[in-house]
Amino acid sequence: DVKVTQSSRYLVKRTGEKVFLECVQDMDHENMFWYRQDPGLGLRLIYFSYDVKMKEKGDIPEGYSVSREKKERFSLILESASTNQTSMYLCASSSRDRGRYEQYFGPGTRLTVT
Amino acid sequence: GQNIDQPTEMTATEGAIVQINCTYQTSGFNGLFWYQQHAGEAPTFLSYNVLDGLEEKGRFSSFLSRSKGYSYLLLKELQMKDSASYLCAVRDQENSGYSTLTFGKGTMLLVSP
Picture (cartoon, chains in turn green, red):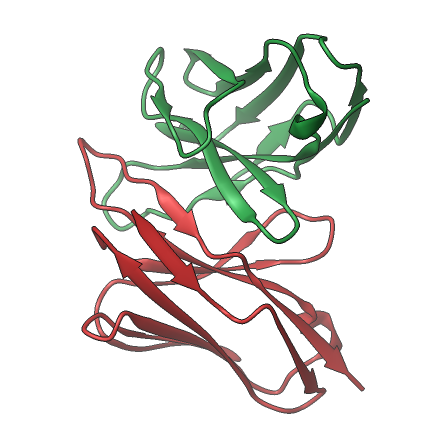
Protein backbone atom coordinates (compact mmCIF):
# COMPACT_ATOMS: atom_id res chain seq x y z
CA ASP A 1 0.00 0.00 0.00
CA VAL A 2 1.17 3.48 -0.83
CA LYS A 3 1.74 5.53 2.24
CA VAL A 4 2.00 9.29 2.31
CA THR A 5 2.56 10.81 5.72
CA GLN A 6 2.51 14.41 6.86
CA SER A 7 4.34 15.71 9.90
CA SER A 8 1.35 17.12 11.77
CA ARG A 9 -2.44 16.74 11.65
CA TYR A 10 -3.04 20.06 13.38
CA LEU A 11 -0.80 23.10 13.67
CA VAL A 12 -1.35 26.54 15.18
CA LYS A 13 1.10 29.31 14.33
CA ARG A 14 1.28 33.04 14.80
CA THR A 15 1.32 35.64 12.03
CA GLY A 16 4.85 36.21 10.79
CA GLU A 17 6.23 32.82 11.89
CA LYS A 18 8.11 30.60 9.48
CA VAL A 19 6.23 27.33 9.05
CA PHE A 20 7.48 24.01 7.70
CA LEU A 21 5.11 21.29 6.56
CA GLU A 22 6.76 17.97 5.84
CA CYS A 23 5.57 15.17 3.59
CA VAL A 24 7.11 11.72 3.15
CA GLN A 25 6.09 8.95 0.74
CA ASP A 26 7.34 5.38 0.76
CA MET A 27 6.55 4.26 -2.80
CA ASP A 28 9.53 5.69 -4.64
CA HIS A 29 7.26 8.09 -6.54
CA GLU A 30 8.91 10.66 -8.75
CA ASN A 31 6.16 13.26 -8.52
CA MET A 32 5.05 15.06 -5.38
CA PHE A 33 2.47 17.81 -4.91
CA TRP A 34 1.25 20.31 -2.33
CA TYR A 35 -2.37 21.47 -2.33
CA ARG A 36 -4.50 23.57 -0.08
CA GLN A 37 -8.18 22.87 0.37
CA ASP A 38 -10.67 25.54 1.38
CA PRO A 39 -14.49 25.40 1.61
CA GLY A 40 -16.09 26.50 -1.63
CA LEU A 41 -12.75 26.61 -3.46
CA GLY A 42 -11.80 22.95 -3.58
CA LEU A 43 -8.27 21.63 -3.95
CA ARG A 44 -5.78 24.08 -5.42
CA LEU A 45 -2.24 23.23 -6.44
CA ILE A 46 0.49 25.26 -4.73
CA TYR A 47 3.71 23.63 -5.96
CA PHE A 48 4.83 20.34 -7.36
CA SER A 49 8.06 18.51 -7.98
CA TYR A 50 8.82 15.88 -10.62
CA ASP A 51 12.32 15.04 -9.44
CA VAL A 52 14.78 15.69 -6.65
CA LYS A 53 15.70 19.38 -6.47
CA MET A 54 13.15 20.20 -9.19
CA LYS A 55 10.10 22.32 -8.46
CA GLU A 56 7.34 23.94 -10.45
CA LYS A 57 4.78 26.55 -9.45
CA GLY A 58 1.17 25.52 -9.35
CA ASP A 59 -1.86 27.78 -9.47
CA ILE A 60 -1.34 29.62 -6.18
CA PRO A 61 2.39 29.71 -5.27
CA GLU A 62 2.47 33.20 -3.76
CA GLY A 63 3.59 33.20 -0.14
CA TYR A 64 4.95 29.64 -0.33
CA SER A 65 8.19 27.90 -1.23
CA VAL A 66 9.17 24.23 -1.39
CA SER A 67 12.18 22.00 -0.98
CA ARG A 68 12.89 18.52 -2.32
CA GLU A 69 16.33 17.36 -1.26
CA LYS A 70 15.44 13.65 -1.21
CA LYS A 71 13.10 11.69 -3.45
CA GLU A 72 10.79 10.62 -0.63
CA ARG A 73 10.45 14.00 1.08
CA PHE A 74 8.77 17.22 -0.07
CA SER A 75 8.53 20.22 2.22
CA LEU A 76 6.24 23.21 2.02
CA ILE A 77 7.50 26.43 3.60
CA LEU A 78 5.52 29.46 4.61
CA GLU A 79 8.22 32.12 4.96
CA SER A 80 6.02 34.50 6.98
CA ALA A 81 2.66 33.00 7.84
CA SER A 82 -0.43 35.13 7.37
CA THR A 83 -4.02 34.58 8.47
CA ASN A 84 -5.14 33.97 4.87
CA GLN A 85 -2.92 30.89 4.86
CA THR A 86 -5.17 29.22 7.41
CA SER A 87 -6.26 26.12 5.53
CA MET A 88 -6.07 22.36 5.14
CA TYR A 89 -2.81 21.39 3.40
CA LEU A 90 -2.64 18.11 1.52
CA CYS A 91 0.43 16.45 0.11
CA ALA A 92 0.22 13.89 -2.70
CA SER A 93 2.56 11.71 -4.73
CA SER A 94 2.31 9.84 -8.00
CA SER A 95 4.38 7.60 -10.21
CA ARG A 96 5.76 8.52 -13.60
CA ASP A 97 5.02 5.02 -14.89
CA ARG A 98 2.59 4.87 -17.81
CA GLY A 99 -0.90 3.97 -16.69
CA ARG A 100 -0.15 4.71 -13.03
CA TYR A 101 -1.15 8.34 -12.89
CA GLU A 102 -3.32 8.46 -9.80
CA GLN A 103 -2.20 10.67 -6.98
CA TYR A 104 -2.04 9.31 -3.45
CA PHE A 105 -2.79 11.76 -0.68
CA GLY A 106 -1.54 12.18 2.83
CA PRO A 107 -3.97 12.75 5.75
CA GLY A 108 -3.59 16.52 5.63
CA THR A 109 -2.39 19.21 8.00
CA ARG A 110 -4.95 21.67 9.29
CA LEU A 111 -3.01 24.89 9.79
CA THR A 112 -4.42 27.79 11.76
CA VAL A 113 -2.57 31.11 11.67
CA THR A 114 -3.60 33.53 14.41
CA GLY B 1 -6.46 26.58 -18.09
CA GLN B 2 -9.16 24.28 -16.88
CA ASN B 3 -12.75 24.94 -15.80
CA ILE B 4 -14.49 22.07 -14.06
CA ASP B 5 -18.11 22.12 -12.91
CA GLN B 6 -19.94 19.72 -10.67
CA PRO B 7 -22.99 20.14 -8.43
CA THR B 8 -22.29 21.38 -4.93
CA GLU B 9 -24.58 18.99 -3.07
CA MET B 10 -26.76 15.96 -3.71
CA THR B 11 -28.94 13.84 -1.50
CA ALA B 12 -30.07 10.26 -1.99
CA THR B 13 -31.59 7.37 -0.09
CA GLU B 14 -29.87 4.21 1.07
CA GLY B 15 -30.16 1.49 -1.58
CA ALA B 16 -30.82 3.95 -4.41
CA ILE B 17 -28.68 4.91 -7.42
CA VAL B 18 -27.14 8.35 -7.81
CA GLN B 19 -25.30 9.97 -10.72
CA ILE B 20 -22.83 12.79 -10.10
CA ASN B 21 -22.04 14.83 -13.20
CA CYS B 22 -18.89 16.70 -14.10
CA THR B 23 -18.34 18.97 -17.09
CA TYR B 24 -15.04 20.47 -18.09
CA GLN B 25 -13.59 23.00 -20.51
CA THR B 26 -9.86 22.52 -20.85
CA SER B 27 -6.86 23.67 -22.81
CA GLY B 28 -5.42 20.18 -22.56
CA PHE B 29 -6.89 16.83 -21.60
CA ASN B 30 -5.16 13.61 -20.71
CA GLY B 31 -7.74 11.79 -18.62
CA LEU B 32 -10.27 12.31 -15.86
CA PHE B 33 -10.20 11.08 -12.28
CA TRP B 34 -12.82 10.64 -9.60
CA TYR B 35 -11.84 10.75 -5.95
CA GLN B 36 -13.85 10.19 -2.78
CA GLN B 37 -13.18 12.26 0.31
CA HIS B 38 -14.81 11.61 3.68
CA ALA B 39 -15.00 14.53 6.08
CA GLY B 40 -11.64 15.20 7.71
CA GLU B 41 -9.85 12.59 5.62
CA ALA B 42 -7.63 12.49 2.54
CA PRO B 43 -9.10 12.01 -0.95
CA THR B 44 -8.91 8.41 -2.16
CA PHE B 45 -8.78 7.31 -5.78
CA LEU B 46 -11.96 5.84 -7.30
CA SER B 47 -11.54 5.77 -11.07
CA TYR B 48 -9.62 7.00 -14.10
CA ASN B 49 -11.06 7.42 -17.61
CA VAL B 50 -8.98 8.37 -20.61
CA LEU B 51 -11.09 6.85 -23.40
CA ASP B 52 -14.79 7.37 -24.06
CA GLY B 53 -17.16 4.96 -22.46
CA LEU B 54 -18.11 3.35 -19.19
CA GLU B 55 -15.72 1.84 -16.67
CA GLU B 56 -17.34 -0.34 -14.03
CA LYS B 57 -15.78 -1.19 -10.70
CA GLY B 58 -18.13 -2.90 -8.28
CA ARG B 59 -20.88 -0.53 -7.12
CA PHE B 60 -19.13 2.43 -8.77
CA SER B 61 -19.00 3.21 -12.49
CA SER B 62 -17.52 6.18 -14.32
CA PHE B 63 -18.36 7.43 -17.79
CA LEU B 64 -16.47 9.78 -20.11
CA SER B 65 -17.40 11.62 -23.30
CA ARG B 66 -14.40 13.60 -24.52
CA SER B 67 -16.31 15.28 -27.36
CA LYS B 68 -18.86 16.64 -24.89
CA GLY B 69 -16.41 17.44 -22.10
CA TYR B 70 -18.56 15.38 -19.76
CA SER B 71 -18.18 12.66 -17.18
CA TYR B 72 -20.34 11.11 -14.53
CA LEU B 73 -19.83 8.89 -11.52
CA LEU B 74 -22.61 6.38 -10.91
CA LEU B 75 -23.04 4.91 -7.45
CA LYS B 76 -25.38 1.93 -7.09
CA GLU B 77 -26.92 0.31 -4.00
CA LEU B 78 -26.05 3.32 -1.94
CA GLN B 79 -24.82 2.78 1.59
CA MET B 80 -24.59 5.23 4.47
CA LYS B 81 -20.79 5.07 4.24
CA ASP B 82 -21.02 6.55 0.73
CA SER B 83 -21.82 9.93 2.32
CA ALA B 84 -18.75 11.91 1.28
CA SER B 85 -17.49 14.54 -1.11
CA TYR B 86 -16.78 13.34 -4.66
CA LEU B 87 -14.08 15.19 -6.57
CA CYS B 88 -13.75 15.29 -10.33
CA ALA B 89 -10.22 16.06 -11.59
CA VAL B 90 -8.82 16.55 -15.08
CA ARG B 91 -5.27 15.47 -15.90
CA ASP B 92 -3.37 18.05 -17.91
CA GLN B 93 -1.25 17.30 -20.93
CA GLU B 94 1.77 15.26 -20.06
CA ASN B 95 5.03 17.14 -19.97
CA SER B 96 8.40 15.39 -19.59
CA GLY B 97 6.90 12.47 -17.73
CA TYR B 98 4.72 14.42 -15.34
CA SER B 99 1.32 16.00 -15.40
CA THR B 100 -0.87 17.85 -12.94
CA LEU B 101 -4.50 17.53 -11.93
CA THR B 102 -7.05 20.32 -11.79
CA PHE B 103 -9.85 19.54 -9.36
CA GLY B 104 -13.47 20.56 -9.37
CA LYS B 105 -14.87 21.95 -6.13
CA GLY B 106 -16.44 18.63 -5.21
CA THR B 107 -19.97 17.31 -4.79
CA MET B 108 -21.10 16.60 -1.24
CA LEU B 109 -23.32 13.51 -1.26
CA LEU B 110 -25.56 12.85 1.71
CA VAL B 111 -27.11 9.39 1.94
CA SER B 112 -30.10 9.14 4.26
CA PRO B 113 -31.75 6.01 5.68
